[in-house]
Image 1 (cartoon, helix red, strand yellow):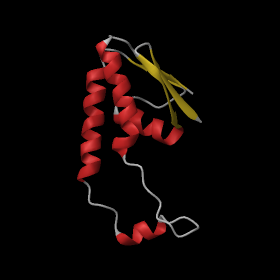
Image 2 (image 1 turned 135 degrees about the vertical axis):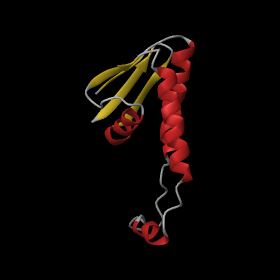
Image 3 (image 1 turned 90 degrees about the vertical axis):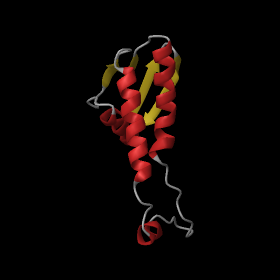
Length: 108
């Protein structure tokens, strides 16, 4: 399943279900087949995402044993995608939407 976020102020943003669900939970929305972040709710959503990113970066790095488990079939270490990288496009969409007083909606 994919989440598709739309706003009149920004290009559409598509996320896989686990990442879209995580973003929605962070901003206090119930993940589901559709919903809305109103223009009035956007500043709080941006603050919540920025706080979650800061908290995730404050955690200690993964332990060596865990990193070994993240290797692919060729023995290469898999690069993990951090919350900052996943949230950045959504935060950008929220900022553009706030500037134009536009809502952000999503659907699956």
